[in-house]
Length: 418
Image 1 (cartoon, rainbow, N blue to C red):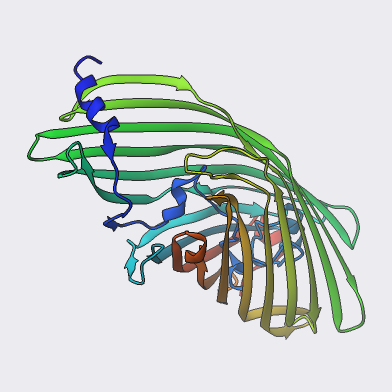
Image 2 (image 1 turned 45 degrees about the vertical axis):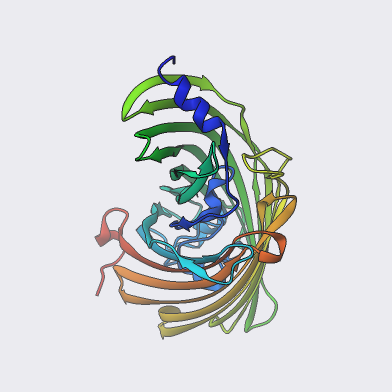
């Protein structure tokens, strides 16, 4: 520490300028809290604004409601993988010029699901729970207000959700489901101070390791309003959870580690979350649906001026047209087309003001064969308000996924693919 003290004193005496000269990031707001929470379904219902709490489908896995597994086709193993590419363009308060971000490419979920018989179904998988990805570059004046010091803040990592789901049919109209999740991951922040003329290079690395368990329960109810109209209702309830945190702080001077310490940090609390959805299907082809999600976040201070967590809400509406072919007494989907809209108030407030976002979505999918189907989604939206002294972020993301199918066991006992 003695070797580090003179350099640290220089850092603490910084006179920071108000402007950020450059920034490259895929998600500028992921610097706050535990990062960007994934509230979307990176699957079939993505194109409907992720409006699917009340819906189920025999050919696709719905991660929004555990009870939806009872809608899968019996005796078929479903393996699903989805990826996403995201691009952002943002504008700082007081500026009219925008800056682009890097392209963020990542797998968003891997899921295995099966319904062995009429009474129950199961699934397990892995997907991101939150994502951290930012890079800030600042030039600050120090000491005599003439010497410039470069400050770089680089954040990465996130929290993953490893989960198992069990669903059961209670009657022809009602099904329930339960998901048990293990949440784990690391939030990594690297802060570097540099000045070539002074041969000054101090680096601080922080590794925030988090882990927790969470439970979710779901219910779905379906009934016919008429011969051609079916209604669906869905409900989800996610339990509160507590993240245990172990933080390792590491300091380097000219690339040499001079101090390292690991300590338990203040716990981070996840809220009780309630979701509800309602949908109408016409002729088994046209679907109109709406979802509401409320998360009762308790107030927790986060590392930014006058910023803290607060209850969040999300509302989404979706439309879908499905082209189906009738073979015997069953309908088989050939392709589908979707549109959706969503509005969300984020779980943290910045400078005492809410962070809101809106987005429009489009989606389509096709059944290529009895063994394979694919889906595609596009979302365009905006987050943040310059008039509230927030970064205005315009974003676009593309989602692409594929579902592979195989018989659970003994295909001769059931049927063969054509």
